Each structure stands twice: as C-alpha cells, then as structure tokens.
Length: 282
Image (cartoon, rainbow, N blue to C red; front, side, top):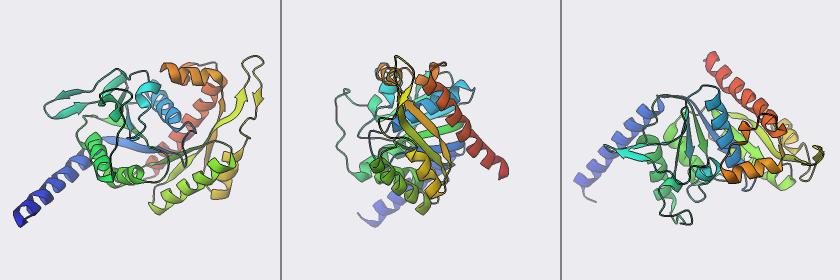
C-alpha cells in the first residue's frame, strides 16, 4: 500500500466513524444481550424483549449480531423476508409497526448456508448493520450477540460507543453460571454496565397440571447475581408452549395468560427501570 492509498483508507475510515456516530445519536438506548455459552435461550430473550418494548409503543431496532448462527429471522417468523435497498441504504425488515430487524440470515442464499468468515469480515458486516442500515429514530436498539466474549461483542462495543448496558442470559446449571461470570467480567473490563442476569429455563411448566418441575435446577442465576453484585432481572420457566412459539415464529410475549409471558413482563419492566432510570440521572 503506497502513501496515497494509505491516506485514502484513513479518509474512508474517518467517514465511517462519522456515519456510525450519526446513526447512533438517533438511538436513545442501546442494549446488548449476551450469554457465556450457547443453548440458554439468549436469542429468544432478545427477540421477545424487542417485541415487548415495541408492544409498549416504543420504536425498537433488533440487530442480530450472531453472524454464524443468525436465528432472529426464524424466531420472529420473518425468515423469508429480505431488506429493501435504496440509494446505498439498507432498510431493516419490518416485524411490527414499531419493530424492525436486521440479520445476516436475510442476506444468505438459503437458510442452510453457512458463514465462514474471520474476524475482520465479521466486524465489517456489523459496521454495515450499524452505519448502512436506515434505522431512523429509535427508543431502543437491542443487539443479539453470539455466545461467549469474542469478536462480535468486542466489535459492537467498539463501533457503537457508549452502551446502556448488557443483559446476561443463563440457565441454572453450574456450567452455564460459570460462563455467565466470565461475561460479567467481560462487561466490567469494557466498562459496560450490567443491567442484570436473566435465569432462563428455570423450572419446567407441566402442561397437564401447571406445576413447575426443576429439571435444570433452580435459583442459580439469582445466586450468581448476588455473588457478582449485579441485578437479578427475573426467571423464565421452561414451557412447551414457549418452544412451540419459537419454532413457529410467534413471540411468546403474545401469550398474555401464560406463566412465561407474565414472568417476562416483570423482566421487561426491570430492564426499563434500570435503563430509563439511569438516563434520567444523567
């Protein structure tokens, strides 16, 4: 690379930073949803949180930052949709009048296509999700991240700047809790506030009697939150209807009378109290 090419590249990077900053200034609250390990229901929590906030009359963007396992389109029942592209701008896929989403899953040739990318390519994709997607004015941006503390969460923090916080999703087992502690440490190192821990799959709801059976133990997420000195947002029981809803692309928050929906409503209120209360103090 000669000096002229180097200067051009610096100029392009500077322009990108300005664009990203301008985009993020239109977003009131930015929340990351993370988990220390896979299979704990992180995307289900992120998608239903975004949907629930939209149901409350807030304008919400849901960014699927899981490049290798983009499940947001499936969970929201929009895997056949495609973002509209106009004048070098990408328009996110509308889910409801208040909720829009973007995912690499919308851009793959088929649902079975795998993404075999190294870190720099993934960061570039995330940068485009932030700078080239026409999100508009948003009350909340929810970022669904892949498991662990690797390239994607680090890239999101670097690109998006100051975050309102991170929600950590875990199940009650000891292994999941061990990884959750690592995620809390990750947030502390990057100076991202921990909004709290959600304990998912906390007891199985029997479809016949409605009683909860503790298949994956119980209360581990709350204990971890106490030990780590971070808020406990609540627990979501494992319900067969919740699994069916995810598979059919129907957010479980629409099932108003279910125990899962009622438990999640409390979590949503706790998240809003933390984020919006913090904003009022600034």
